[in-house]
Image 1: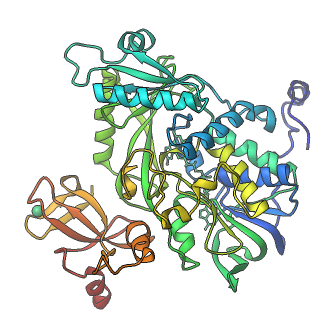
Image 2: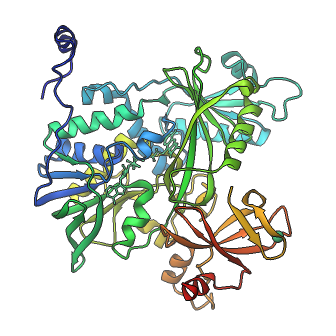
Image 3: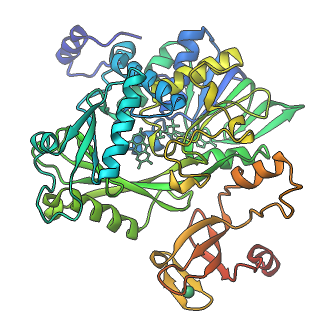
Length: 418
Length: 96
Ligand SMILES: Cc1cc2nc3c(=O)[nH]c(=O)nc-3n(C[C@H](O)[C@H](O)[C@H](O)COP(=O)(O)OP(=O)(O)OC[C@H]3O[C@@H](n4cnc5c(N)ncnc54)[C@H](O)[C@@H]3O)c2cc1C
Ligand SMILES: [Zn+2]
C-alpha cells in the first residue's frame, strides 16, 4: 500500500481522484488467529497496530460487529488532556498525550490533533484551591499546567459570564496548553490503515456472539461469520463489555451508562480552546466546520441504548448558558448518545482477566478517547508479554479485590458519580 | 422521559427521582463474618445486564422514599415498580 504524500495528492488530482486505493482490505476471517481483538474502536485498532508494530506479532484479527469507529470513538467530544493527579492515571495519560503529539506522522494519516489548550474553570474559592493542588501535582509529574486568575481568564476568554450578577463567579482556571482535540474518525481510520498495512485483518460486520472454552482458556470465538480459533483474546468493546463478559459468566466492576453529545449550527470561529465549567458538568469546543461541540453528565441510570433522554439535555444546556450566556440563541442541530463503560472507581481497567488467555480493556468512563494511543500501546504490551506494562500495572482488575481503587474524584464505588 | 409509578405518589416523571442503582446487591448479613471475596462482590461487582435490571430510584422531589423499579436497559421501558422490599424480578418471571 502506498504512502500518502504531496506527490500522491498531485498525481491523483490529475486522475480526477479516481485511482485512490482502498485504505484497508476487507478480508474473509481465517480459521485461526494468534490474537483476536474484539471491537474495532480506536482502542481495538490501536492495540492491533502496536501488537504488530512494537511486538512483531503477525497473525492478528480485529472483529467488529458494525463498522469500524462506529462506537464511542465516532461519538465522542474528542477532548484530549492529561490533567490527572493520581500517578496511575497521570503517567498513563501523559504517555498517551506524548503519543498524540507524534501520531499523524507515525500513522501517515492526519488525525487533526489540535493542541488548542484545555481550560478548567474554577467557580469557587475551594475549587481554586483544588485546581491549584491539581496543577502542582501535575507539574511534579512533569506535565504542563498553568494556573490563571480571573483577570487572565477574562483576557483569554472574554465571552464567559464575567458580570457582577453572574450566579457562578469565575475565580480562575487551570490551563493545560498541550491539551486539545482531534478528529475522532481520523483516529480510527488512521489506526485501521496502519494496522492493515502491517497485516492485521480487520473484519467488520462480524459480531462476537459467544465463546468455547477449555479449562481456563478461550479456544474458539463464536461470531456471526462462524467460529474462529484463537491464541489470545482482547476485549476492547467499551460499553458492551458487561454484555460480552456475561457470555463467559464473568462479572466486572463496570456498569453501562449512556452519555449524550451535542453539536450546534455552524458559527464563525468563537471558541478557540476547550473550556470546562466548574459549577456544573459542561465542556465545549468548536469543530473545524464551525459547530460548537459540547456535552455534560451521563443520563445517570444504567443503559445500553445509544440514545439519551430530554431532562438531561435541559441540564446540560442550563449549565452551558450559565457559563456562556451568548449561547442562548443558538440552535442545536444534532445530538446522540454512546454507551459508556463506567468503572467503579472512575479509572480504566487494562490488564489480565480471571481467564488465562483473555485480556481486558474497559472502564473508560467519560474519557477514553484521549487514551486511544496510550491504551493501544500498553494493551499490546500486556497481551504480547502476558504481563502489564509499568504504565498499566496499577490499572489492573485485581485492584478492586484488594480495595486499592484509583479514585481520582473520591466519588466512591458508585459508577455514575465518576 | 421515563415514567415511574411511585407506590405512594403515583405515576411521575423520572426527573423527580434520583437514580440510586442496582437493587440486587445485598450487604453481607453478618459483616464481621464476611470474607474479602464477599465484600469485593458486594461493593464492586455488578451484573450490568443488557435487558431487565432491578434497581432503586429515590423519589426526591416527592415523598422521598425509595422505589424499586424493574426496567429494561435497552428500551428503558419500566416493567414493574414496587416497595424496596418487593422482589420484582421474581413476580415478573412468575407472571411471564
Ligand atoms: C458522547 C460521548 C462523549 C465523549 N467524550 C469524550 C471526550 O471528550 N474525551 C475523551 O477522552 N473521551 C470521551 N468519551 C469516551 C470515549 O469516546 C471512549 O472511552 C472511547 O472512544 C472508547 O473507545 P473504544 O475503542 O474502547 O470503544 P468504541 O469506540 O465504542 O469501540 C468498541 C467497538 O466494539 C464493538 N463491539 C461491541 N460489542 C461487540 C461484539 N460482541 N462483537 C464485535 N464487536 C463488538 C462496537 O461496535 C464498537 O465499534 C466520550 C464518549 C461518549 C459516548
Ligand atoms: Zn413518591
